[in-house]
Amino acid sequence: MSLGLDAARLLVATVLRPAEAAEWRAAPTALTVHAMALAARAQIDLLLAATLRAQGVEPPAALAARAASAKAGAAWAWVEGAAVLDALEGAGLAPIALKGGDLSARAYPAAFASLPDRAYLRHATDLDVLLARPEAAASVMREEGFELDAQGATHHVRWKKRGPGLAFSVELHDDLFDRPHGLSLSMSAMRGDAVAVASPDGGTRRVLAPLDAFLHLAGHAVYSDLLRDPVAALRGPIDLAVLLRATPLMGTSLTKAALDAGLGVPLAIALEWSSLLGIGLPATPGLLERGRRQAWGARRVLRNAHAALDGESPKSGPATATRALLAPSVFSAFAMLREGARRRAHLL
Image (spheres, rainbow, N blue to C red):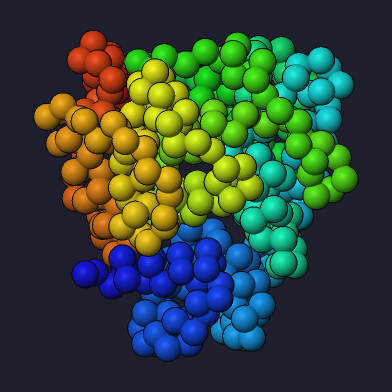
């Protein structure tokens, strides 16, 4: 067992099963130090500090300072994010908050109802929004003080706003994953199925239906640099567990939706990695039937996840090649490789 995986399991047990804080107290110093380093890299300092305090353990000064900084950043993100969503709503663009913008409103406050600062526990420095027509939002974003930062490769446009010592980005998406992805996703159906949830600031926020949100989180965690960094390798599975606490899902419905979308293998990898971290997620029969190509890709992803927790370089890559191994079809795998080569040539 590696120090990184042991520390990640300790961190998961502490924040998801806080009654087991005795495990934190009994852990060797080297393990808790590594766990706190992972918390910083995965941006869950505030969640860890709040959980420890709730169990009568005073966080070390460095962790407490990072937690205070994370709270300040998250508070600003809430203000800016709410203003952007309200402005887009007012323009009739029907924005849907994704990932952090969803979880901070819907899942984390419900899953950690006994902790203070519930709205800030899911730290985020940007806001991802699903729109039918991101290009129609340009005037709204400029009126809110944002400047165009960069054109997303194939599925989003990024806007940025700078404050005193802080920066906040908004990514306007017309798809859930970077294209070409070969997945069978209906954006119009997902927009139609979106639900409104109460947010901690007293307002409401439109988010994906629970099943769509869970599949997006699982797929994004696996596709996000193929679990090369602790944000995806550690916070991704925690996000999945927290969303399930807020909105329980049926395993059979989840399996069918994943297979229909072409996300069966990424979801299986996400659940497998979550299990290795000690997170119990619902069983999804039928997902583990991988072809040889996809099984090879899954092994590469899990090796990279282990390396990320130990602070090492990825054990395999490049990301485009590994992502192509997980593609739902050979045709989409070749399309990914072709697009990856085009982007590299453009950057060079």
